[in-house]
Structure formats: C-alpha cells, structure tokens
Image (cartoon, rainbow, N blue to C red):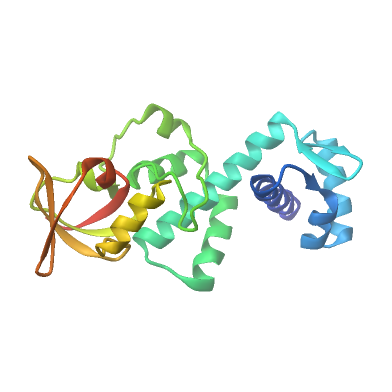
Length: 219
C-alpha cells in the first residue's frame, strides 16, 4: 500500500507541474521527493506504463493521466468538503485532504461532488477535473452548496466561494461586500434579484449571481 501511495503522490505532483508548465522534468520530481525515491519510482511508473520518460522529460500515458486525474479530483473535492462544510483550516485541512485522496473511491466522491453542487474549482482556485456526475448533472441529492441564482426568495445563505474568470465581476462583488463568509437573505428573485445583509439592499444580475456559491443556513 505504501508503494501505491508514493506512486499516487508523484502522479499528483506531475499533474500539478503540468498545470503550471509545458514540460515536466524528472529533476523537479527529484527536488520534491529526493533523488533516490524519484529514480526508483519513476522507473516503476514507466514499467507500469503510467508515464513515458524521454531523457529528463516526463509525459503521462493515457492510463497514467486518468489515474492522476482521479487523484487530483479526490484531493480537490476533499478540500471543498473540508473547507466549505466542515470549515477546517490550516494544517488539519491539508492533512485531511491528503489522506482523503488515497482512500476514498469514486462512487463516494461522486456523491460528495453532487452534494457540493459540482464545484468547478478548489478553495485555492485550481480546477477540479469533472467526473461522470458532473457531465451527466444528475442531482439525486439536494446539493449543500448551490449557485446563488438557484436559491429561492426568503432563504438566508452564507457565501462559500466565488467562481468567475471575470475580474470585473469579482471586483464588483468584492466592492459591494459579497465575499466568502457573508451571510445574506434573498429578498426577492423577480423582476431582479435583491439581496439583503444588515441594513444594506442591493440588486445583482443573474449572470453574476450564478457564479456566487452559497450554503443555506436558514429556511
């Protein structure tokens, strides 16, 4: 089991390196895990046809990429669960996510992903690879976390995270105080969405509201 965990840790790291660079070099893996571990396990992974080694450059095979994708998905879904639902932070948060990724199967991950509303990014803003549950969008369970645009009027919610590539939208939300942790009430949905927090009321476009993910805290 320990050998498999080490392989998964290296696959995860190679995936992260690929996200940030066009080429993944074995020297970077050596710097992370130590040269002895890197040399031993990269050779094993090549024999298992998880990676291809071209001199110092590492490329995933299709089976290797798929396995790495599942590891990354488990880790980042775990981060969302620990951060958004259990409200864990710091070392305990990261340690829990690392343990989670090695021992939870895809069926459980799919159920958690559905409960969380199929999140697109982890708390650090990194993309969560989609699973079959995301592609089919079958919501057999009511999600714990949903886009603000899908919440009914009268509900009190807490902003969990914001997922948007638009800097203008993010700046607008931040400027009006809509940030993670804010508790607000959906005052009305039509003809426009009106939010209330404290003594403040504001209107929000649906195109922006769909990027604000919230958790219902009072029905």
